[in-house]
Image (tube, rainbow, N blue to C red; front, side, top):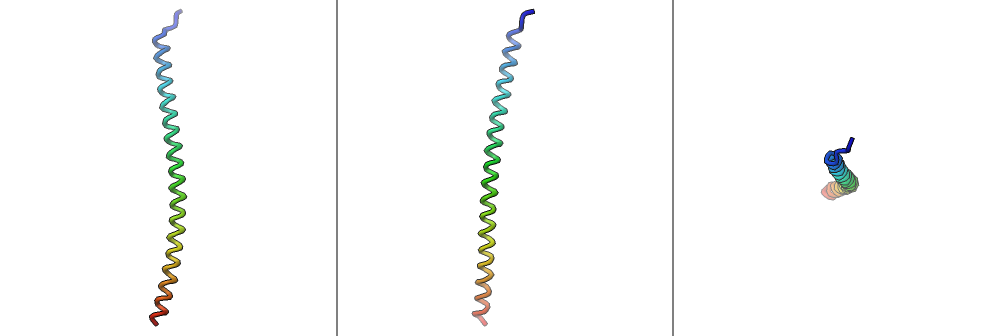
Length: 69
């Protein structure tokens, strides 16, 4: 029995398209993961800065209160 070339060609095209979409989705997911990691690092750094500013503000407030007395 002869193979149906049109069906084979269609199956190859469908498989190729699915592979391309899968590769593109994988790249997008990888980029999103990297962006999330960078955002997490920046958030950690900002949190540390805010804590340092709180500590500095508390110390300054204490010095102002003692100066006013």
